[in-house]
Image 1 (cartoon, one colour):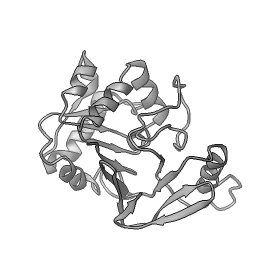
Image 2 (cartoon, one colour):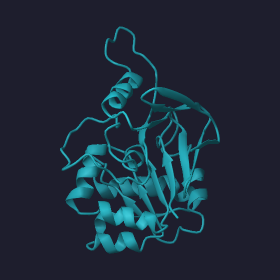
Image 3 (cartoon, rainbow, N blue to C red):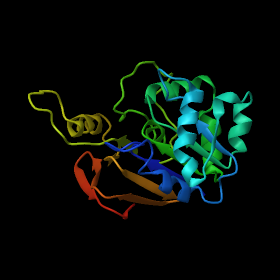
Length: 231
């Protein structure tokens, strides 16, 4: 039975890295902490080891340590033997292309389907959906396909906001997502504001967080509040 934790973000405004979510992560992987694998491929502009060290520094106070997937030669074997898989945020296009180039998409799908817990934040959450078409990121590289891990049956939009900049004439985030839904009329999008997340166990999907999220479809909008069960 699949078990996932999909966080909108890692850092809240004026907080330390992972301050808001480190206890949530530790609770999620309780009993699965002996061999946690970290997928660092969303990092751009700093090394994968630097990213891994940053995660370990943040999670050390809650007794969690991760291993850098990029350090292993047989990455598929390491994935299949992990006690949990963490996928960090950064650039979603770079993350997906790296997984595709390394032939790891199916390996992660199979591991999570087999019951290995999966925790992602930002880009790491976005790739849990069917595609990355609802990411906020710039396509700095070109994946072979937008198809992602498809661990959940709906799209995600982390960092969701309806804030509007003064004197800015561009589309809002919601308008962009509505365009996606016009072009993909059978899809649904769960919008995750900062400091919100999904807990998934099998077919049970629960929205959590202190602020309201949204479930968008082509002709419908549903508000999501703390402990909303999504069917």
